[in-house]
Length: 290
Ligand code: NAP
Image (tube, rainbow, N blue to C red; front, side):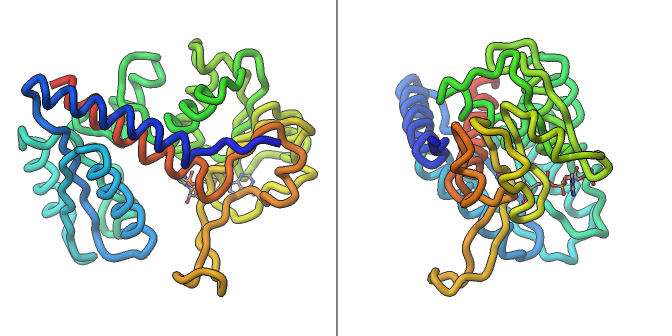
């Protein structure tokens, strides 16, 4: 069993991005600038945003964190998004999800200018990605593809089973894996909560991608010997062994599944850091496209 080390791979990609930023500056260009909007003070969202801001610093990007209280109205938020859309200095904009229930996620996503939508959530980017046209591909699926690619994992002709059909992970990763491309060409089965005989299907997977949002859901009896397993899940569980009082776990029961795999992503240190570098890559792309 080998670990698909997202932490190390993302470090390498950050060095590559930082080098490209230096080159842009040497040629008289401007630093890429990512703006993040955070509504409320949910602990997990605070952590994700602070990782994103820190990563911007590490590669030489500028970043702006725009905060709102939970009570912010939909109109106020849309007004700010439009301001950022028009701000020539900002290349990419992300809205940290989830947002409070009184605000329509759909309206917020559609308010972001597609050319600044570095999260790749806007219907225009999703549509273009689906058609195989140049687009901002949402960060988590893109990070998974890049990790498989950097480890030279063959996807062509393989049976890839995706558990989960969310718009931000399950659906886009199933499209990318089946895309007619060097990093795709897999035969994809997409499973969800209404899937019957889930275990029978997951056991056929050469590549199993778990994006369910249920801690330890994938157990050893669901996995074929020698499979490649990608664990997208992130769960904070209480721990008396860490300073923070919690540690991260995935959707896969790592301890029992890992021995059966040819490759597996750990949590933490697998898909999470790859998601952040994909966001950085999209921001760099947005800057270059200007
Ligand atoms: P989501 O929107 O809650 O979607 C979960 C999916 O799992 C749904 O399609 C659901 O089916 C399916 N599901 C739930 N129970 C199931 C069951 N018993 N059998 C089969 N399918 C089942 O979640 P998400 O946003 O895709 O996120 C999934 C996980 O990834 C979460 O833990 C999240 O925190 C994590 N995540 C991590 C990253 C990262 O950077 N590593 C990024 C994004 C998300 P239905 O559609 O039928 O309800």
